[in-house]
Image 1 (spheres, helix red, strand yellow):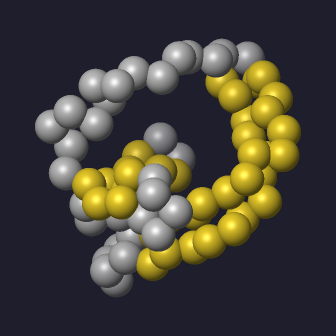
Image 2 (cartoon, one colour):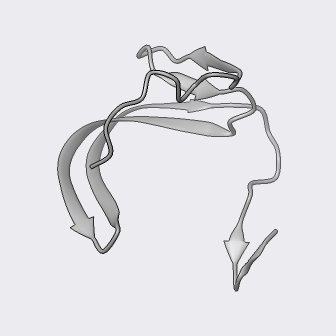
Length: 71
């Protein structure tokens, strides 16, 4: 799994969630989970988690990728 990079939030506007995690400004929602399991799937990782907290942002249309296009 890729390592942490202390500069990954450089230039990104964000706030701290109730649990202390960074949430990008404008996020429609954020899930805060305890990691239960991590599985490798090709060049990706799939995380299974237990949701501890959900925070809702402003109401807006979500970004959807379907049939090769964003909507």
